[in-house]
Length: 253
Image 1 (cartoon, rainbow, N blue to C red):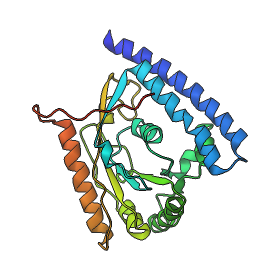
Image 2: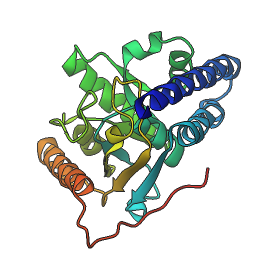
Image 3: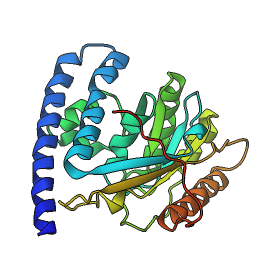
Image 4: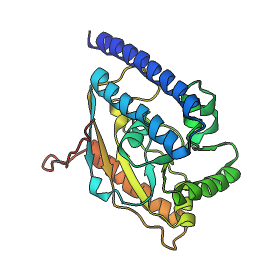
């Protein structure tokens, strides 16, 4: 019975998500001639609507630990990747930003249109050398203009309870741009498993770590520090000490 109810709720959720995405896709065409910052301010409301819809229909809430570590100026956010939830959450919770995405996402009607209008860093993952050059060049431009850069260095979504090996693109960008990395760990896959219809009610735990300054270190050393912190923090989220109550904060919807 529970599975049937969750399936029905997931179907209704997807219909609502489709409607929201269709609306934002049409809006993206209407505001395309406007400056990028204006387009962003309009189109990013999609993330707010989806977060509210996710909480109301799927019963997915969140807790944030380490919000005091979020810096004032632009940073490169490096996070493990388990679902679509964290992509939406970062848009909703963090300052104006851009994302490193697969170029083929632009082919998705409505969603791809609105994404393309915000000028993300769209790379061809089959061309690793040129993709890294593009990431550094365009990433520096966005950071200089005050936008944060969101990177999922695993390259694809991992299963609940797992974190894959990280690529070093985020570390290379931080070294080239001279900006800090903000590591983030979460367990969104427990509530929103990748490539599955059903979403499970519960609380996603998100942990922001202290910023990691690139300094003059090699990218591989920086990448190792980021990866080690996220692996460790993720393990703590999955296996919390019973005596420690995490700091919880939920942004008002």
